[in-house]
Image 1: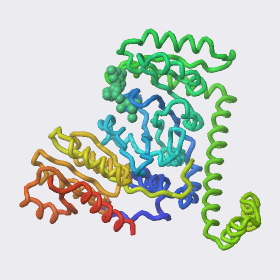
Image 2: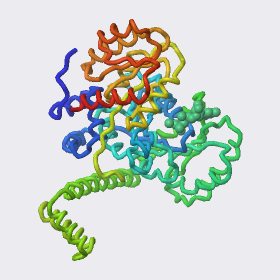
Image 3: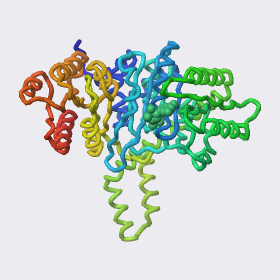
Image 4: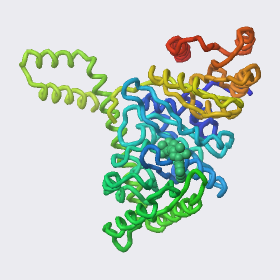
Length: 324
Length: 139
Ligand SMILES: Nc1nc2c(ncn2[C@@H]2O[C@H](COP(=O)(O)OP(=O)(O)O)[C@@H](O)[C@H]2O)c(=O)[nH]1
Ligand SMILES: [Mg+2]
């Protein structure tokens, strides 16, 4: 089987034809240099909108990868194809990363109905990588039914996944002690579903009570979705069917509550447009730094002829002028 | 959102095909490569060559490192190379490590394995070799 090498002219068609190598390569381009691939992703966008996007978050060690593995299995049994993005942190010291989530998902390595991609945060905060939304688009355009995103697991700050996902699942683990539980105050704003994983552990009853109380005290309106609490033992697949049921129930709820659904969609695109625009601005400013007029302004600031604020303003106005 | 310039990282898959359950060596290399700025995808134990090649394509790695202590390197390593070729992915290079008799090394290289690192090789030599090989691949 000899294929023509991948290039910018053929890669999109090959992604749409579900070519694994093309998809893997485009994801790589997205990770390495989003700007280069923007025109390609733009072509892809009209083919997206099919997949349902599920975020899985929770502290490191909570059992996210183990649970995602089981969920993939359950979804496959229900006839769904599954894309999965597993995010792990980049080392701030070396810029490298060990991406080990796949170790728990080995059993799906030969299933053509499953595509798993490991990504590193590469300095991005918020629990996912900067490239994650575009990787979702690629998997979506390949017509995977469900896309599971395992976030890094930094807890409260993982707001980015909420903006990206249709359904956000937050994992909790029994027996972590009071102070940790107390910091859960914000999770109701993140979670569509609350999971108690490691339900085989001591402290399960107590955690269930706490989560239920929290939901009771939360200010939900008549028409709001109230997060259910689901108990799982991911290591033995217990409760995974309930979790899948709850996910589909939430997706159906979104489908029958168009206002909320639109809100989710608007938030997602609102956030992503902002992200792309910020990236573009950063790139332009970065480019400008090598210019002569940048050096001129710099020298004027050095001699205190003008302030850094005036210099920045002047440089920005050059850029805006040039763009007109 | 904090990184302003596009960053490229080399990506490497560290695989443990076959039956042996000793992954200490694989993990030492994985950590050394991470510390050198690589993104290391670790597959876990007991992978078949088919699984590894599929992972390599999904992850678009630059290379696959195979750690084999079971003695099955003479079939497993060439199998991975062959499957990559079949998938039109011969640009992904394969290297190996583990317990590999000296006399097997030339044969493995003949069959497309780029390099074999024996237990005596320092991790910094491995890192240097792979960095150069990845640089070449991208130039
Ligand atoms: N007892 C118990 N252990 C679990 C359960 N789920 C996961 N684990 C273990 O928790 C550890 C961390 O799991 P992992 O999926 O890597 O967590 P992640 O860091 O959130 O992705 C592993 O040793 C799992 O085997 C569970 O339901 N019960
Ligand atoms: Mg994990």
